[in-house]
Length: 431
Ligand SMILES: Cc1ncc(COP(=O)(O)O)c(C=O)c1O
Image (cartoon, rainbow, N blue to C red):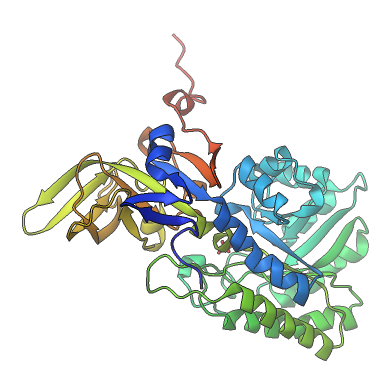
């Protein structure tokens, strides 16, 4: 069972620590708001996938979904742990290239990749996960110099992952993926263009999934189709990607499934099914993002004001908000909050409001915290995924810095933006 706290998190004499590093010292050095990652939690989360797979299904790879949170340092750290990667833009791909991640560890997603993104992917030699026929046609045109390109097809498994509407992707009306019945159009292109090498299929059913059942449904839905491709069309399915989406705990009552157990049970099921259908077992891929990095993150904010509205509520105003964590507004996401320094005081109810010029910029309503005063620091847990990667410069605010606590060292991952950064691309009017 995962936890909303990073593994190394604890309070010592009321002060928040990651291992032996005091978060008070970290924020004193790097300022606020600040994204903090715990390296031990990331390592642990990767091992939840990698260790069981090494024995139960060694022909496998775990791709980190870069959309969750990506910097050069994060990519390099994860690569050293044995992770591969999926990207969903040229920018993410460029980041991996700059981080020296080898081409054969990268898979490229997206439903509308531009020509230049495809060209970058082909030149670097990454595997492209094709979303639609136009994209495959574009790839064929871009491979005129006969540079071979490995492609997988993203197929709609047509199942419902029972998660928030905005983060489910496997159902028929999803904008992502190809309907199985349309496969013949793709097949024709594979037959007539030998440079485009079909390596297998990809499915992703959604995100923040708490139930393992949809993953099994995905396999059940894909097996007859894969059998048809192999036996009737003579194709080889050398790789099968079952996506990511494994849920994590944000609030106390959340109960995500145990990934270690799931990896063992699920790979047994996969092996059984491929044998039942008499088709060779492919290399199996997973692409988790949130379950790798989400629980490793804490955001630290400083309280600038406390506004009490008699008989209504008390707002705590923090120095960040919707621009560094859009998830409460985007998905009604909830988080666990606490104070950086606790003094064993009685709990009171607070609404945590951001500093952005929107009434909706409230990270949480009615959170129970010890008395909050101006100058206090608040901690928000499980903010490692989809916080920085979705951050904006709304109201021309600077995006926060990010550091990783790695044992006794604090590793800077991202500098705090400056006002100069904000106007870097602006043009002055002439005259
Ligand atoms: C295609 C694809 N793969 C992987 C992921 C990672 O999902 P998660 O971070 O929930 O594991 C996503 C996220 O939406 C995705 O769209």
